[in-house]
Image (tube, rainbow, N blue to C red):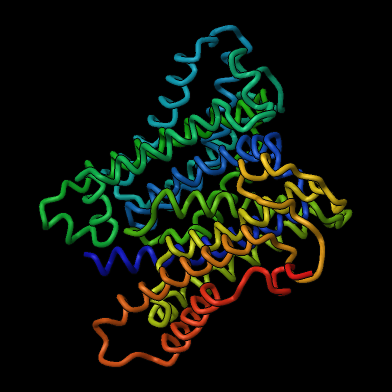
Length: 443
């Protein structure tokens, strides 16, 4: 079981690397992203896609190749129903709105599950039928975009600050999934996804588990519809098709197995955020009349590349098994945060000489103001902090290497070279003096 969990987590290396590259590029190309308004707007825009991807993720884990192609039209259906009832004056309470949205999502998914279980129809056929039916029903309910969202939801989609009700919904939805993974029901769900027949012979009530998975997916779709309604503050029956394609692509980018048994909120979240970042980065370029074409083409290319890298993960993980996804996430996250801090504070410093009193310098971390000059331009305190951080990072990687290779009969060439480099870095951290010209001192 431990080996299976480790191999499943290895698939997160691809979305982790992808999101690090995309986020760094997005920050460099569009510095406005590194502002409270930029982050707030990103959360508002990405939340519906993230929640729709969560819904698909739950069904994909359940197995049988269950990819609900109707997740987009279902989200649009809930959106137009909520807006229609709100415009008519029948829906104004937040509690009633959530009950209607979540109830509609759960009712549809319950019907989906019952057809798959009792009628024995393949899930892909039911999903395609639901996609076509809901697309037409949405246009009957609301022939064109319009209407007004409930009054309490009018300010949710402004995106002027990071903290908003949409962020709260997203955090609660993600946290609820991680709490769900600690239950026996989730264990049965993954077992059914890996091998439904083996799960049934082991005593798992597969029909109940499948119905439960569909109900959870319905909740996520309902929450996504609420966030989407807050985003556009009206009803739109035409966006369901695009939402389905976006959510399915995000699901694959997140390393979730469409055959079942492997997947989680972490991969789905990173896949959805990566897809939003692709659109954000492409929007910073001016492709003119072919902007939409370029966006779709890049979506396809990155999707194919991610699938190829996912297929190579089992092979690559044999040589980099000492690097866990979480350590990669930590290292790449620190690099991205550094880029964001550099971009966000680029115009906040001056190269002119600054007079600093001794009392003020002693109170804070920096003993001298940062300056521009030969070398790295670091003060003594900054240089010591940099070397200490590099030494700590070297120690962590060396410890992981030793632990990973402890049971091996002989170590390969790569671990020897890497350990030698880390030892050299430790030597530099202890011996090199900050006053040398390497760090901008001694001038």
